[in-house]
Image 1 (cartoon, rainbow, N blue to C red):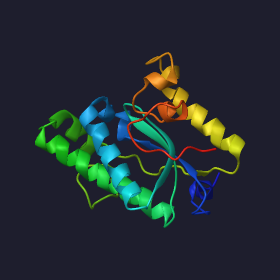
Image 2 (image 1 turned 30 degrees about the vertical axis):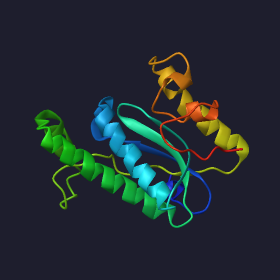
Image 3 (image 1 turned 60 degrees about the vertical axis):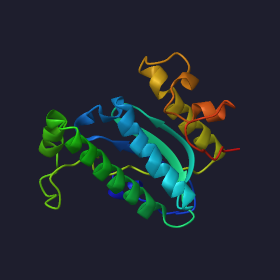
Image 4 (image 1 turned 180 degrees about the vertical axis):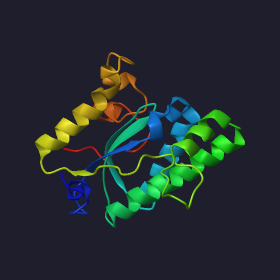
Length: 178
């Protein structure tokens, strides 16, 4: 199948994204690293550059459903670039030599503009075409920690919009899909 299926063709529609850490490294097992994701999302929301409908952050990847009133492709690229820099800088400060070594070893060889690579290439955007598809993606995301055996109920996973959809307060503003 061609690479076209992973392009953003309709900038205004919500898209489902998966962002995976290279080599599935458990970077987000550390709450300080998760906070860097939230801070970036909050900034993009405050600047009215990103609308978040749902998300889950696992130890080595995240899923996000988002749209943008401006340019979704550009905003996701900005999110990935900024968070990679912030997380790598933090790992350098903490002298996390083992993780930095792995991020260096897993960098794509043709990427000569950097020493480390945090995210696997691509975020595999999938346009949300219907209410049924939106609900399926939200259910899939929210049940990710349950399937992994981390929690028994999706609302018990703090790094997820499952709480928002259950009428509870989440950790970041989410635009609920009706």
